[in-house]
Amino acid sequence: VLTHLKRKEYDKALIAVGNMEKKLPRSPVTHNLRGQTYLGKNDLPNARKSFEAALAIDPAFFPAAASLARIDMRDRNPQAAQKRFEAVLNKDKDNLQAMMALAELAAVNKREGESLAWLNKAAKTHPDAVSPRAALVKHHLKKKETARALALASEFANSRPDNPEALNLLGATQMDAGKPSDAAITFTQLTKKAPDSPDALLRLALAQVAHKQPAAGRSSLKKALQLKPNHLQSLDALLNLELAEKHPEAALQIARQIQLQHPQSPRGYSREGDILLARKALPQAVKAYEQAMDKGDGSAGFIKLHRAYILAGNANAADQRLNDWLKRHPEDWVIRSYAAEYFTFAGRNQEAIAQYEAILQRSPDSAAALNNLANLYLRTHDTRAVTTAERALKLAPDNPAVQDTLGWILVEQGQTGRGLELLSKAAAKAPGIATIRYHHAVALARSGDKASARKTLERLLAEIPRFPEADAARALLDKL
Image (cartoon, rainbow, N blue to C red; front, side):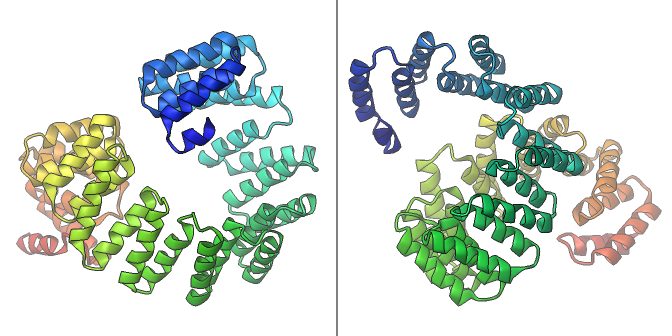
């Protein structure tokens, strides 16, 4: 069944599930696999029925509950998703996966206290489990509470000195906290606990390189490759080290070694493309990226290929590739967002508008998409500019880019009072963005405060002499 699912042979998978059910008629696994197959076919009603059948056999069967919760979230029903996991805990009060899922769900819905409560309960209930502690560490790092994150990771590692996962968590936390020397010590301990692990040596190498010890890092990577000559992550890290030390030929050889040792992986071809692009060997870079795409490279690889086409002066091929990709992958929102930015940069306003409008159909509360669309509406004299910018501001009231967009639209439409208020806030929050400061100066001038406008422009041009509106700023300064 899993083989057919991996190949997206959903009808064959259903036949295999049927054969499996004859042998295991009361197994929740059978119904769960049928549900996964229907999900692949995008048949949500039958997927739901299958997952519910799995839970009818075993109400604590987490995989089915998690799949139903994902469908609930797709339907914008987080309350139903929460009840799925609570139902699992009602049958299995110590279920770690359900606790972790409830913590994640609370975090997604911005209920931080509830999320932390579930993580702490999971950690207390499962004293040896890494996942709740890793989630707590991640939370504190995100909140810039570095000392707390390090204390949690250190406490866990010290209480379980023979647990490689605990050492790995501590080393990773030290790396995230900007302490590569401490991480190198921790990962050295890890390599002693797991002497046959190339992954442990890789982590040690990355810490050593970050600690400005490239020779030690190279030695650790070579040891990892002695243990496992085709260890992809170590090969890639060694390639990056060669590039950092300005050895592009050595890096290129490693990329081609990856191609030989991992012939079905796009990685070696993609990395060859990166190296060739940096050397401005554009036709060769395009070819390498095309080979990576033939090997199944995804959205990030497609963006590399598209940019290489543009740099090589083949805009027609780039456009054809982009249009074909969006037709075949209409829900690839990464590429759709990239397309919107590309069309905007190219001055193809209507095409950019179409992409942002499609994005907003799926994510109507995306402040970034609304803000960019409002700017495009302003460019094209579309009357929806103000209402779109207002929606963005409602979602992100303290974002200087959003304040700037609405403020500038209002100034351009003659509503200088409120426009100046917004632009003053934006300029104060983002003094490094020249365009915002220029807009603020224009608003000051149009409000009649020429002295402040002159002072703002003089300071701006002295600090940042080159920016897109620099000539317009100098022309305005001459008039003042």
